[in-house]
Length: 333
Image 1: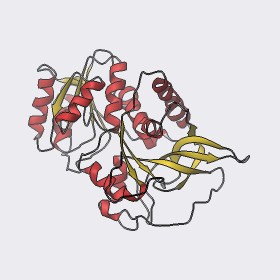
Image 2: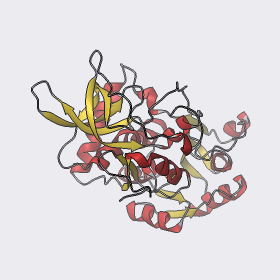
Image 3: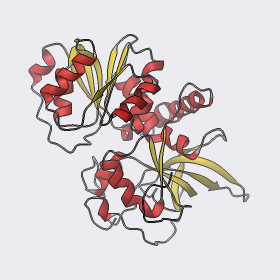
């Protein structure tokens, strides 16, 4: 990226291979994860500032070269961006060995999206057994894992929302009790009514919200007494009205924000990143969690991947593979 804007600002170019400094390690990338946050970095609407020129992406899986010449398969968070590339830098404390049982896509699913889903439910929402929960974009990267983790946590009723019936069917197959079709054209009042109807006419206990605009407003109105709305994005890029404190006082409701970056401080990275990731990997290996593998694009087709992601055409984990040759048509698998 040499400028900010939509998917068109992603340019496929040759640059110098990154050089590790200090404790950094070089990884030959076999897969770079795409997250919705990457689209916000592209148009400069992300929570933190981005300096140009910039190589997007925050997570990779690949092979780290060891001093003895051997290579070990790792996944991890890159240093200051740079995942959309053939080589990327990570640090020992932010990279993790990948067992043979995990595919590249599954490993990437557990980084930004798996960790986010875990903390949304357990750290921020503090979901209790038998509570109802609404999971917006339930067929997406965070959403599909949130459905499964909520089921394991003993949720009483899991309400999935998505933009197509096929995505709703997928969410139900993963453990949701009911699906609500939301195309993005609904008013806050309609969303409130649809969520309550899906909960047998009752308000809901927890909402995981990353759409913003009317979705945020309608979800907040749908909360029960002592209900919690966890906001972790604004995919619609629509303006969200300010919250009237009386909306929270009446019903003793809460709005909680979550940003995975806040788990990455030196004092938190061990318990909130490394320990949780080990637990998620074990859940996958033992069959309690099944990451939804999504579309795989050649690295050269990053622009197409962003276009499809923003158009809601993807499900599961979206990955760029530097080893694939672009046919100029976007999705490969």
